[in-house]
Length: 192
Image 1 (cartoon, rainbow, N blue to C red):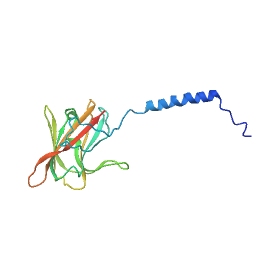
Image 2 (cartoon, rainbow, N blue to C red; image 1 turned 60 degrees about the vertical axis):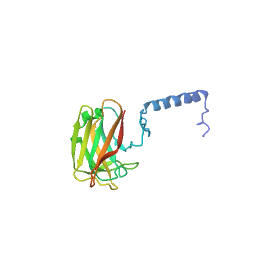
Image 3 (cartoon, rainbow, N blue to C red; image 1 turned 45 degrees about the vertical axis):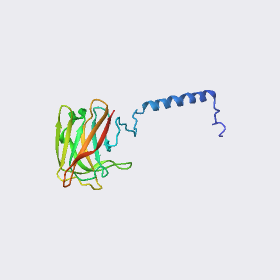
Image 4 (cartoon, rainbow, N blue to C red; image 1 turned 30 degrees about the horizontal axis):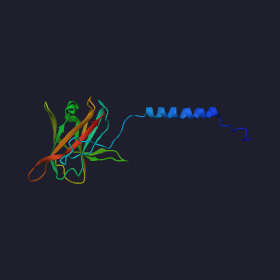
């Protein structure tokens, strides 16, 4: 009964299989996106004064709508912050508006959870656009404490037209008897 259902493997069938599998696998790899998520960051002038800060973006394509999270983790803040200053690259200043910038207490996502703002922190924002560079000054109504909570500066904007690396530098004025402004760190954003 089963002997009639068995077919011998012919040379033609074997040849079809040997040609069909490589062709279909080539189409599979051609249709995949060419994004490479590398965990490397290069600095041309790497010195001990540079501090790399964590960030997250929802879209890295040119001219796309993007949400950028600039994180201020507990390890980044040694003291409470009265004021935060950011130096913004020239290409980002055109699409930046103060209505689309927020400061919030954030839950930093991971493998099983998403990054989201838990609580908005009321703050006064001042955006200065000069010929050479732009800067953003953030004055929270209550100082950002140096506790175990993470905070984020959130930008909702359109990515610039040019791809490349864009570096945002941050400076903070510490809360204390003598308010001193010092370098917090830098975020290097990648636009493809």
